[in-house]
Image (cartoon, rainbow, N blue to C red; front, side, top):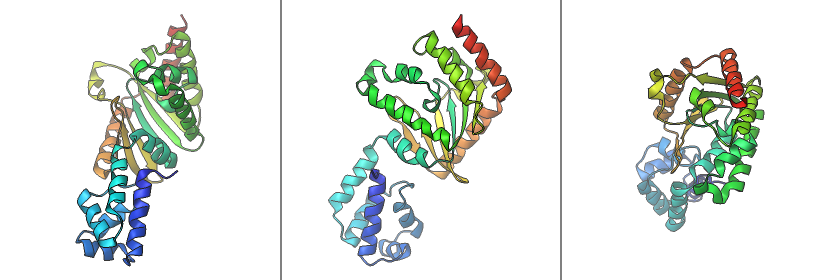
Length: 261
């Protein structure tokens, strides 16, 4: 099923063609905007154009402005994480993630994930959220994954001790895959600046295309090139302070022994 942004891009593109504007440049000249703006508007991977542009687009091409407004509202109010999981992550060839609070969803065991999604304020959709979370893990069969965990994540009890033991065993197993790199960053006072929150970078081919920031209220997705580049620099800085896999394995094994006692 097409996302609201994909539906809007398709509607704008078809309206342009039907109105006789065979090229992006032709419509750009009519609207007195740049050609790249028209190109981005018809690309579902790009940010939606402004209301003023959409209004002018509808007036010039003759499409129903109410339909354009309806789709634009759906794009703005849509579930950001659904867009990430169903669109951006589904196309990504590499995913980089910094996790300062919890094991990332792509690496969670079913028991760990269940303990997370059944938290009372969000428990109404627990079964659906759990299924979606586990289905997303198929990305590990085709994409590269780079994850940096803050050390305290391994000491934060989720579920119970047996859940933590199973989860750490999962990290040790998945971390041996050739397409996966898991690193632990020691949780010391020197890394306090990295405690701002979890974020994920999606890369498609040679391009870093989007960043997901995690929030209990609403996830944020950013495709602006400058913001994506900043996220990459932050991840590189965090990763520079993280342990290599050999030491990370020892760290994970020690955490597993602590939960076993």
